[in-house]
Image 1 (spheres, helix red, strand yellow):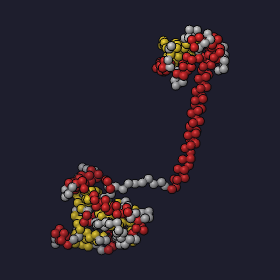
Image 2 (image 1 turned 135 degrees about the horizontal axis):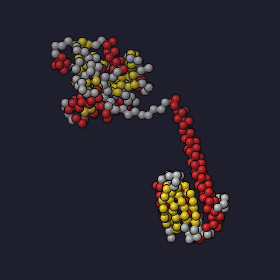
Image 3 (image 1 turned 90 degrees about the horizontal axis):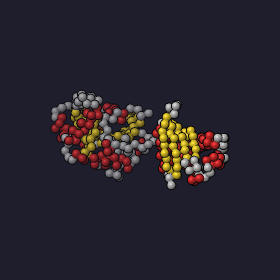
Image 4 (image 1 turned 30 degrees about the vertical axis):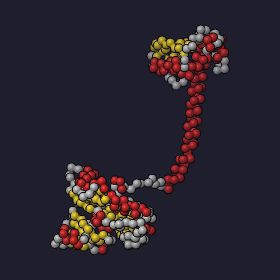
Length: 367
């Protein structure tokens, strides 16, 4: 259901004033109207609100739409031209343009002070309008002079011209032309049409309505469920991370045991590997085996594609290792990491028969 409330802005809005002309349109039909304070009851309910600006304070101009321009381009050009052609300071004027039903461009110009005063008055009454349309734009335009009253607003115009219906002004512009006055049914139809298809909207630019974020109540339950799942997802992610770390640790331990077994010449376990290696390579000379070996394996952890193919430890404190990887760059990163930990490294690159990059390296304490 399309439900719209139109209400007229006072020419001089003051906070004490609450009454105004109003029209309630539902599904394209004017169902009620009035001129008191009861419109505020309608305004507090969920419906579209349209404020009507006084004809005397909004100037309407018309121009032809250039065929080469898009609607937006033509509207922008019309706004600039209308402001430049107006009296007063350009910075104090507000303009809006729209393509009319006949293809021409209609432009409305009002002072920024007036726009601010109207909107402030409506907001204080709890009726912040979704759109603001000039009273003159409600008048249906034909090639004949037509007059109508929309509440207190007396309007006269024809295609290309709309003015306040004041005796002196009307006589000067219309002259001897015949003016046809809309009857009540035609006025009601014009108001209903303005509610359904607002001809132009002054709530643009700095006066555009700021839309809040509305949450559909039917989605609230889903949002609550999602919020409840966030801790569970975080916990699951932590479990996955722990599993990956443990898996990497197990893989590293397995590789260490395999290299230690190869070096010692017999199977060892993680508990007996250090003792067997010390016995095999000369005890704890020069600080022992485990310090440089730990440095090497620490540097290997982030390089999943680098493996150790051999390892030996000399009694002079030199750890000899052979690395293998798809490219030598990954091995170089391992060696640089070992050097950063205070060890002296020598390296001799070569290529394995299977195409892998190999590096024979020695690691010694930097002291």
